[in-house]
Image (cartoon, rainbow, N blue to C red):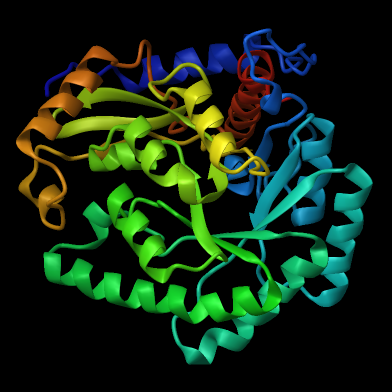
Length: 366
């Protein structure tokens, strides 16, 4: 893959112009479109805490975009912008704080999902159980988790390294399952640039627990050269929660650049994805994960990228390369390098609001 690379100044100039000229008043409610199925009416898009990566615990002094100190300020803001709920970190919550979160959730009418770290050993079970109970006290019924904080093609240099991780990760899920069953809470394992769709499906099916399913991320597995709709079709039957996102791709010298982009601007078939998730789980929440950051480099032209993969045939790779070549992102992918802290906060907020607006006008998520 080859492409010319625009200058950083051209990226920054365009984004600054966008931030200054684009109105933040995109919150007018749209009526459901006639083409939206009945089961999608009166469902509102929520927000994943990672959509506010810059603003979460931000110490940047800003009148327009003050930092979110904790889940309470995040819930308040999500209510103000018309979101339907939040998926937020549950870490070190006291019983008193969990009750405050419950009060805020009940007052605003928002749904609540937690995000939690798996226990890595028996020594961490007590902490894990305390966080499960805090989330339950706050009113969450689903807890999203991820087995790997990094990216498989970056973290692991050999197949052996990956296989060792795989064994430990499955052990962690197995440690968590009895507690989820005991407290009647659902654990949702994300496809977080660690598992291929088929690998995660196999793990969930082998475990065979009604309390362990999937947080279905609509776009992550593009980094594995997997077709987004095929990933969604594979994992939707097991989905307890979602990370709704759209993805833009552009060529670069070692492969392709991958970035979350405002909903409707990328290559994910969002309407089909939403309908499929709702078909399998009518109670599922749709949570926006619009991460405003520099594009990720996916170095598929390097041998090291493939060290832990054997899931694609040559024909699969060809089909994906062709799809991405035909769907190169028009314009420049989002980028925050070179922006001031205030500009980053403004850009982040604009992207979130644009996504919420699209979810109402085009996805029927009211």
